Length: 242
Ligand SMILES: [Zn+2]
Ligand SMILES: [Zn+2]
Image (cartoon, rainbow, N blue to C red; front, side, top):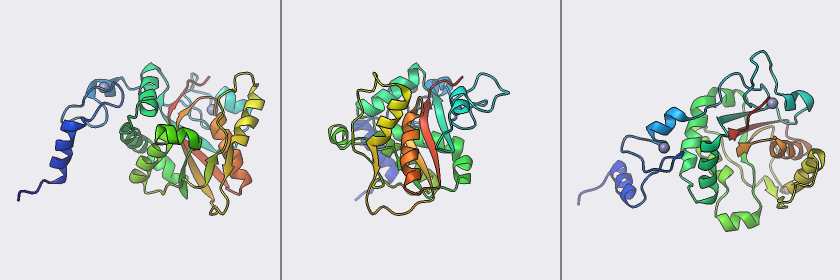
């Protein structure tokens, strides 16, 4: 019997489930990986100068920190993001999260690794911790998008992923009427550490989007109070800094 090699097998599956561009969702050409050529040229990678702490792009080169990071002390040491959260990135992440385009994680993970591998390894993290979603949301969606990104990063960097340390116990939807301090406190209460968790020294939180940094801050506070020494973050997209 003629045996198919792995490449051929994947090729045959492509016919049934064609691989799609992580940005425009069009079917990829044979030579294309993760993202089509046109989209790749238009990707809004976050370049220097960016905030030394949160990783958001800065307008002024002479600054080291964005306005938010200059004003408030962060509980995390640093965050790095791959793409600017522009219209294209927003669409990509929306499909990834809400339209079951789990395969996009491969592209995000590879690009994050290509760009930040040495930076991330220099942090010497024990583990990658995906920012958790509430169990109800997980049941509905079938996956945690942050978990998929963490798995891909893990494959490239050789850092294990732990999903049973940090849990989300409250769904935080109605936050609009709260001021930023209340919002953060509310968010902090939403996360908890599982009992009997192993002790960790340095961890990297993985998430899809960094906007105000409130989620990363809330998770970091919970982790620090539990004895973690240093918390870092890696996200696919980030909003514009100041
Ligand atoms: Zn494309
Ligand atoms: Zn910043």
